[in-house]
Image (cartoon, rainbow, N blue to C red):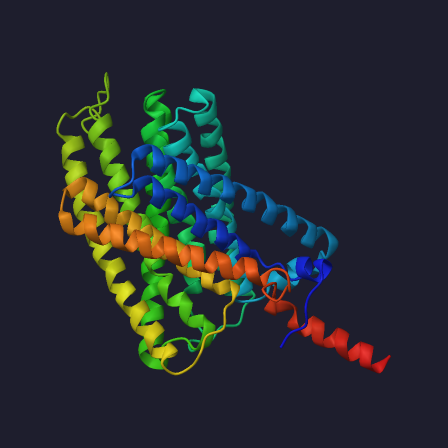
Length: 394
């Protein structure tokens, strides 16, 4: 059993994976806003807003602790970047941040009318900054994986997906921003939407490539062992988020086209918007089906490991919340588009499951903070062993 860590050691062992908490909490905030049953709209908005401000507080806290960590221990950055697992969790930083931008757009601005044009354009500016960081994470981390890391097929997990998902998540928020920006500036809205389609395409292609390798790894070597099995749910993330993004793109095209005064055969067409909308609904449904396939594999993997061993609670459990959350969001969005009762019922059930899972993991995390054992950076293990050996010699 590990010893209790003080504040200094907890900061030193504060890995970037903590921003997965923001990702999961952001997804839950959106789930409250879109929940298809029972609650009064004002109650849903209030719950969504409350979780949003909790998420904002946590994001500022995690960012402050992370900056303190790297300022006080600058050598940790180099060590962490060279770690083939921990470095990939840097991707959770822009994804956690962009969930705040998404809820700020759809709930605070669109539903509450907070801040008006100035607030929306501030969120738009922050979105562009987040996209730039996402590109750095995607291309930078894949470059580091190629040039600095040593990998084995057997040790691969779906965590490899994280740099690719870094582009998919802001694409969906960009599509939501485009819908809101359209009331103020058609050009800004179309530019945002076009860029969202570009980064969605890049991220989705990378996700398909990586998941092909991951499926091959599952067949040859079986499910990941121990706590790593929770990563089996990560594949729901890119397809759930991409499906939601595609449906939002279709909604925008249906509302925005034809563009007044445009001489473009596409943008000026009265039928183009309806055609794109229909195609997006079909694509969104296909992506939901693929996400459902990976959900089944995730559940099969979880029961396979749990029947053989007990999995102790760790920070990696947060990796389950966001993928399951965006899958539930896509399901509810399909109900809104298709008006099919199945999607409403399944979306509500899965939303409740995700919210309860979030509450459980949040409570376990809070309970684990005082003793400091949840603060664990495996990439520092070698340094800790050397320091312990030096103490013994002295």
